[in-house]
Length: 155
Image 1 (cartoon, rainbow, N blue to C red):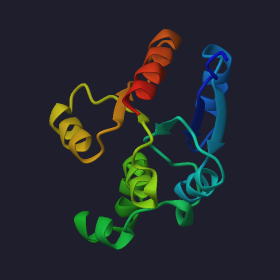
Image 2 (tube, one colour):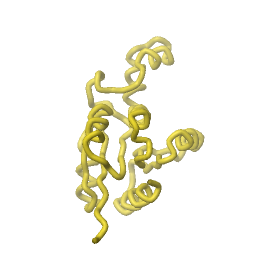
Image 3 (tube, rainbow, N blue to C red):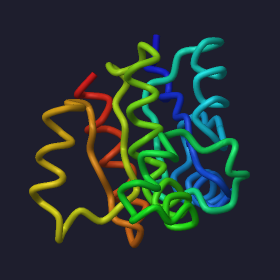
């Protein structure tokens, strides 16, 4: 029996990744969720082979963001707007944590974010989430296909 193509869950606040991956990286079956709660609900219904995760979620309602807004506000000198912006700009990491806490820590995650200038941050994250890898926003279809294959091997 020939191997089946992987199922990839794309978690993003728009449609760019779904459209681009569907068009330029055909083969996998793509599913989409726009928030942590939607992703967890989908993962409860069916297994996925890889998660492709956006970092920044600035186009969803604040109530759909995960993370501790009060703590983020305290970290930003009591400014609630900066706290919300922090949660939105780093939402991918909060979603990554929610997936792990929800029992999906073994699912490989490809985070779309450029860690090229943040190797220490990346090392810390990989220690905490061993199935994590990343691709920069400016990535070719060939590089994405390779990242998907590498992620499946890590599982």
